[in-house]
Structure formats: structure tokens, C-alpha cells
Length: 408
Image 1 (cartoon, rainbow, N blue to C red):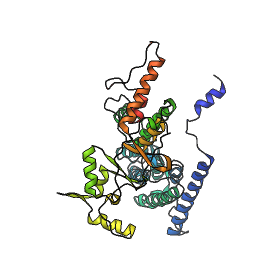
Image 2 (cartoon, rainbow, N blue to C red; image 1 turned 60 degrees about the vertical axis):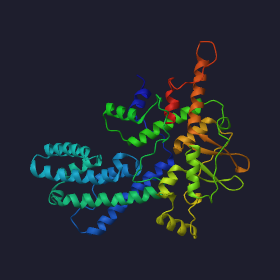
Image 3 (cartoon, rainbow, N blue to C red; image 1 turned 30 degrees about the vertical axis):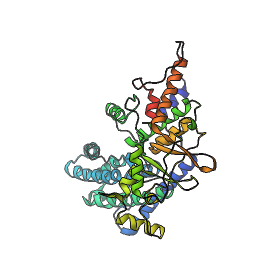
């Protein structure tokens, strides 16, 4: 076997990382370890026999600053993992006289407990060994080793990680990425959350990626495939031009009546020139208004919030509860672009604006899905060897997995 092939197999498969990210991680580790060491030394004094910084913090720094999105690098992982490992190490060191046997027992038991308490942190294995093999200075500390230096070092480097990562554009503690929230049709045969859970259960190994991040990554890959395979149809071909809109000064009771009368879930809020100022959805009415026998009205808390934000009292109208951060589509957008925007934002309906940014229609998720499935059926019919035009997709027909899952 060629040497280059062997070397490639020995190298781990990692996602590409920019030089800027490498520099960010290195600087973070430097600041984290330096800050932890200096603060710890200042706390105990230069003449103290207590260690200011323990070696496992170097491994913790790799996780906290180089891969802050890893489940192994989250706050509970480092605090819980290090404290559990320190407790186990000190206890085993006091019960087992042979250091090698004690080291094996401490490491194995610490890993088992960390997995049970969902705080697996690889450097904590070194913490357990330090408690056993650290020598007289560590042994003399007894269970004080758990608080100092382990507990103190863990809290200090964690504090630096929280500050540094957020200041440099890395959300920490890491919130799992959101998978597209747009539901797929009932007949969809694509990838579901249950499929991902089943695959993870069958894989039965610890992965260095959160379940939410994994699902979001798969959904984005499916959307990318959807964009690549989509046909030439545009947003203009599926938009509904007969739009029911509402004025910003219209009362909430009128908004509710329009939603009920037309069996719709979203009302564009427009000015006299048909410019979109926002959208009012059923969720806006449910979450931002209070209800009584007469219908929705503004509660006291909402009134105070609007008064402080605008400098004037609200009137209980559509403008007081509408969503102002609106994603608008353009008629010339391809259906693939529309699908990506709707799926990533979890939207069921989006307004479409034309010349002079005036409202010209609304795109519904159901119309988008129907058209995409029809496109897929047409491609399948074109590529097959059977003659004749491709039939329109019917509700009972199998749904291509990449299309359905991309919108799931």
C-alpha cells in the first residue's frame, strides 16, 4: 500500500478551518491558561505549597477554546466532570495502596460516573490520575484537592472561556443549532427526527457533536441538495396575488375577524402605499395579547413595554402586536431559494414584494411543497425510459426524500 495512502488514513477527517479560527483558538487558550494561573497564584500567594495550576487545565483549554461547540466542552461537562473525577481520584488513592492499580480504578470509575451524569470531559481523566499520582503535595490536600486547585481552576478557565468565546463570535455556552422548523407533508418519506434518534441509538457511540447540531447539519445538507437539483421555476409562479392585508392602525378584533373569515394564519401589515411594515400571525395574537370574552386586547405589561419603547401609549391595534422583522421574497427568486428561506426560518407564509417594494402577493408553504413535488415527478418521468409525459404528483405517491426532508 502506498505510503501516502497510509498517511492519509492515519490523519483524522476534520472540517476545514481557517487560519483566523486557528489563531482565535490559540489566543483563547493562551489567555485562559495565563489568566487562570495568574489569578490562582495571586489568591494563594507565591510562597504557598498549594499548586496554582494543574496540568489537566491544558487539555480543558483545547476543548473550551478550539471546539467550544462540543458537548464535551460545555460548562456542566468541565465543572461536573472535573469535580467527579477529583472526588473519585482522592477516594481511590486513600483506599488502594498500589498507585498503578489505583490509577486504573480511578480513571475507569471516573469515566463511568461522568457518562452517567452527562458531564463527560476528557481532561477529567487526567484529574483523576493527578489525584492518585500527584505525589505527597497532592495527597496531603486530601479532599481539599477537589476545591483547590481543581474546582478553582475549572471555574476560572470557564469564566475566561465564556468571555473570550462570546467576544470573538462563538456562542458559549453553546446553544444547539436549530433545524428547519417547517413541517413536511404527512406523506413525507424523508429524514425525520425519529430517524436520527434511531440511527444514533443504533450507532451506540459517543459523538463529539450535539444531537441538535447534527440534525441541523443534515437538514442544511438536504437543503443544499434541493438547491442543486431544483428546476427553473420562480416565486412568481406560485405566489397568491389576491392578498388579504391589514392597516397598522386596525384594531385587534378586526385582525382576528380577518384571520377567521379567510381561514389564513398570517396578515401582511401595510401602509397606504402597500409597503410591508410587518406581519400579524395567529402566534402574535396568542403570545402578545390577552384574551377575554370580547377577544384579544393589550395587557398591562405589553402596554408598559410599548410605551417605554416608543415614548407614547399604544392603541391596541395591529401595529402593537405585529412582527416587524419580516423576511420578504422577490418574484424572481427561484423556488429553491424560497424553500431555503422558508425552511431555515420555519415560516408557513411569506410576503412577496415587487417594484418599489410594494406587496404583490404571498407564498404559502403548501403551494411551495406541491410545486417542488411536481417538479420532482416531472424529472423522474423525463429521466425514465418509459415514453409519455410525466404525471402530476398525487397525495399517495412516494415523496423524494431530499425534497421532503429538506423542508422537514
